[in-house]
Image (cartoon, rainbow, N blue to C red; front, side, top):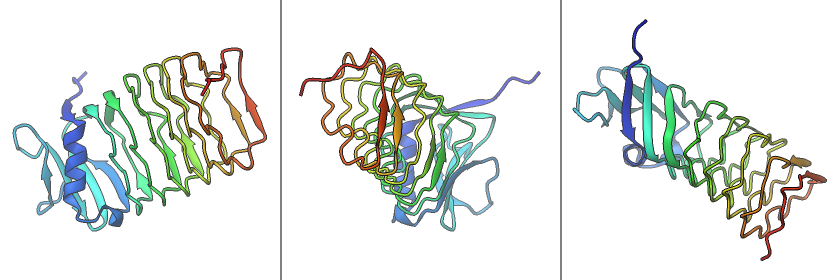
Length: 232
């Protein structure tokens, strides 16, 4: 069998290139990976050898990330990757390996027109910071993070703040033993009616300020004996 081809990229280089490629990120409607590149594509060469083996380009209002091989392994930080991309309606991160990413702070914050997001294959095993990760995703009704590994996460403050349209949220995979900050975590999740937080261990949480603030339809919260109330 053939050996999979894996390319490497620093997360900050990708995020900066995304911001620099468009004068106005609010005009972008989709982000996807691709194994095709048009001849006259306008974009940024992110490959170490400058041979366009990793190339970020725009096609009308779409942003596309081309790379050769099977997988693109990203390391470091993806903080603010899609921050303020208010026109985004579609995100496809297939073939991207995030197992070396440590920071996803505000990664999807203010993607206010995104209706759904499937991150079931996103590798979060080394992530330490998820602060504001989905904050301000006002219209998102479906979010699949059912396989998230959060064993190294210390900051979940504002993580789902102002996710006004979320109907359900499966957090059963969450390990929160390392988390110290949960303030405003679910604030203004106005359509959530119940939350199963029985996987949560909050022994080390220092702040829960307004964790469920203005969750006007939340009727049931299920917790285990590992749930401790942080003294503010």
